[in-house]
Amino acid sequence: MEKNHRGIGEANGKIILLGEHSVVYNKPSIAIPFPAAKIHVTVIYQKEPTTIHCDFYHGLLDDMPELLESLKATVKTCLSRLNKTDNQLSITIDSHIPAERGMGSSAAVAVATTRALYHFYQTDLTQENLLEIVDISEKIAHGNPSGLDALMTSSSIPYYFIKGQPFEPINLNLDAFLIVADTGITGQTREAVASIAEKLNSSNQALYQQKIDELGHLAEQGRTALETNKASLLGKLMTSVHSLLRELDVSNNQLDHLVATALKHQALGAKLTGGGRGGCMIALARTKYQAETIAQALHQEGAKKTWLYQMNGDTNE
Ligand code: MEV
Image (cartoon, rainbow, N blue to C red; front, side, top):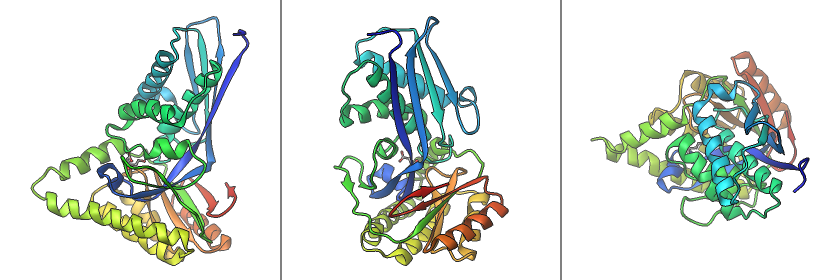
């Protein structure tokens, strides 16, 4: 292989519409790839020992020890599966997915890095192998990952997903806009996942299990809403999901405040997305004008960044 050879890989961000957390317990969930926020990884040879350089839209890799560890695990797993012992690689990650915001940044880093390494070594990578490798990294980043982030950041279409079952593509038919807003607060996926696990082991187990079951039912109904253009219904389901996630103690004040702000400005529904306790919230609007009005209000109330996503079409920042 030529020394100036270059491997490239990319991945999308992801947004969970319904079913975060309950997906860990084999309940249905719905997520969409989020191409408005992408990661690109480049691998080349260098004279020095292997380095990983990462530009995040905020923060440094060194300040995110779990992400750094999971990334090292990705590289190690890939090299071992590829039967390579190279230690002179320059791996550059250019990320437009905010890290630790519930947008699948850690999975996307693993997906794009794996793709770049396989491309570098000119080896075919099946989707199955990719998901296996990313699962190893995600266990380090999240403890008990459902596999949802890995699937979404490596896909281009929305999926209905139950852990351990075949992924079902969603036939998206929804005339609506999604607003995604970054609270600017680091999400706590690992802690939130662990805290729900604790609740499900406590004396109140039955109560919490009911909430997890209900989250699964809401995601099931959401699929019909997405496939039959029922934006108002989807909005209501989203708001109900937020209430349940609050009751499971994975929201926080700023997420609750931004959800209330979106609803006050005629959002059809709003909720946190992803692991929670920080990270991002999402809201649904029928028209672009409504979506822009909501995004503006969210900025005024402290959102650090917003994205608009036309559910059946293009993405705009
Ligand atoms: C994290 O983006 C989503 C969670 O459901 C965890 C997981 O699915 O692995 C909270």
